[in-house]
Length: 281
Ligand SMILES: [Zn+2]
Image (cartoon, rainbow, N blue to C red):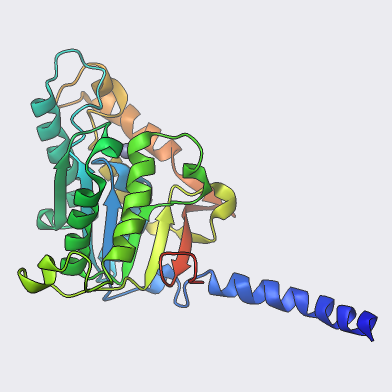
């Protein structure tokens, strides 16, 4: 009897595994999303670049996209002649230019103004409160954020690790009316639960959703080439305008960053549905 029960349970295993796999993908493929509100939270003005093909596609398909960046990016340079103030300004302009290539309006870019490189030492409650405010205002159907999964349990660029955790913490806090209730009582906002997530920069083995960006590769390249201060010669010696050859080389290096899967250019994510505390699916 016991053996039969074990055999019966084992026979169910593939179905259970299949069921789990099926809920780890969006019910409607990302390529078919339309009329959704999408919020991407990143640490720096270019963290959205690894999702640019997907964002360009979602923008073209009639979704509303908002980008919230935590830091001004005012440290990321090897150019000895740039000040923090200059770099913050340059990075803002580069981000707006990149978003322009994707068709995302400049008014949808929100920078929370923290200093680059030291995000983990900021007042975490204040950062979460600011992110909660953005979430309650924008009320996204989907949150794009750094994956707070195992890749960030290991050492990694600290701002990314911090942005991963604080975005997830803010997503959880936003749904509780009595957390940051001043936003509700005094600012007229309402609590909000984000229903779905696409985590980017996941460990490759954690990815479960791959978006075909075939039609949007050129937009990704043109947008990526706007980050002159970060890539190519601008990293060591910034100048606003590259020569034709330099620009071509920069675009080529962005093209090389495009991942391929089954012969198609893709961007990979970990899709997650449910409450941001691992009790979702
Ligand atoms: Zn970054």
